[in-house]
Image 1 (tube, helix red, strand yellow):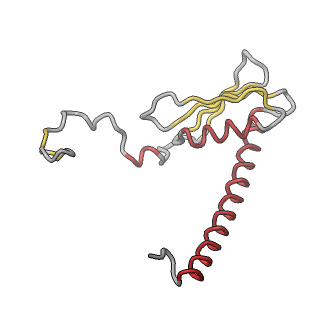
Image 2 (cartoon, rainbow, N blue to C red; image 1 turned 180 degrees about the vertical axis):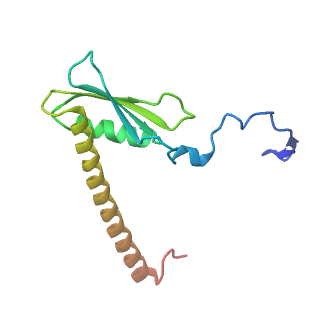
Image 3 (cartoon, rainbow, N blue to C red; image 1 turned 45 degrees about the vertical axis):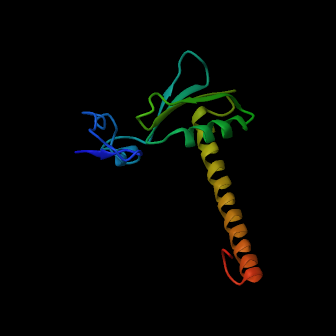
Length: 144
């Protein structure tokens, strides 16, 4: 099969070039018996756990890391993506002992849901206001 390239000529695909790319549905659907989040307690450092999030990427990892830093009980929070072709990340958390790492993650998730709900409401409100202003100024949305 010949594929067109941007210059208009055709080239033969490299054999196996798409073999190492996972199917799109594998990036977000959990397999049978696969858990969304697993926790492993770090026995070397007190009040530290390592969470593995499956079928998630930098978007959630960075939001959780940043939100956890806002808690006065979290001493350390960091994440890494082990491999770019696999949608998972590892989050390491250390707390001061007032909260367990699991409690800190659950609270951060609840706070993120609240924040994202507020963002959605504010965005929708602004969008509707701009639509109303646009309709009153030029008689329709988009204008000339």
